[in-house]
Image (cartoon, rainbow, N blue to C red):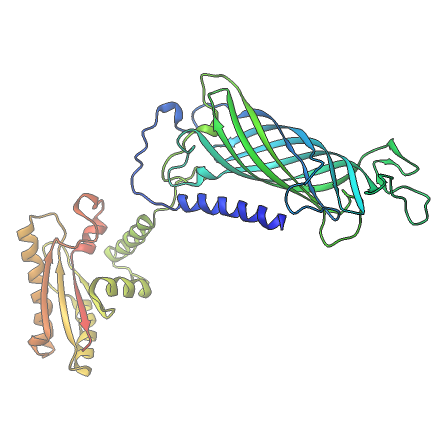
Length: 427
């Protein structure tokens, strides 16, 4: 029950943050001062040390409570040294120590633990659309690590408080104590533990932060209570309040509290722009077209775009030189395929959409696109003998261009705008 509650709280917190991070916008409206902005070229403070205090709650084979102990609370301190690698990432080395006790109506285990761990940290708010501290005051982080739990433990009878012996009655059930003298300390026992932590911190000023973090530490073995039975390995929960001192010059911000650039991922690399990739691929195809090479076109993409624009995926595009409307032999072959389809499907109709680039005035562009529509129509009617009434001419001029006027940056885009789209509409 206790693990379900912890997991649920942790998952809900992470999902809530990621839900906020998914909100998209096309412009960074943040009003930031220069010292708030992160840049690899700037120097920020990156080291910090934190001290904290909180309860250590053991969950093992002897635990009688669901989440919180009904008695015998144990508290202990923690110290952690952190190094900020990047606003979104950090590492820390943490030590915590505390006495512990857990038991039931028959047995209880009591002891002391020192936990050493190395943790990788990610700041969840740095994954947001506008990465940086929330309201410039709050950081929410998640960290996971690996460590060693160094401990001593004894098993007692609940009713008498006597230390339990083995079945033979020759040794006491202890770890880190002498089996023949259960109160004589010897070398601590050790086992590997894996901590998972969720934390929230508040920036007081350039020197200090305060925060709260909750950690569940899972042991790899089942020795903390010295009861080697049960279905689950031992684990312990350690929530703590912490005070952090940020090491470094106080005229500089700590990297943890900086705002990263909009449009960059958590590794500070520019996010991919799908439109830019699509335009680049199109420009490469047009460069091949201009050099009279065979252009390999993704037929699936062509069908998708034509269906989205015209409501039909049966389409042929004819491209023209500047100010021209004449068809060449290749154009005749392409148009003949449309004509053959129309002969076999006498109820089908065709829309002829004419376009031109935006280098001339709108009236002249409209006139050029009209001539291109008429040239295509003339081939179907005069050369192939198809009924004129089955065609609709739709000259567009410079309307519905591939890219708006202010974004046309290459001759390749102009070439693709000088075209006629011949679209078949099924009955």
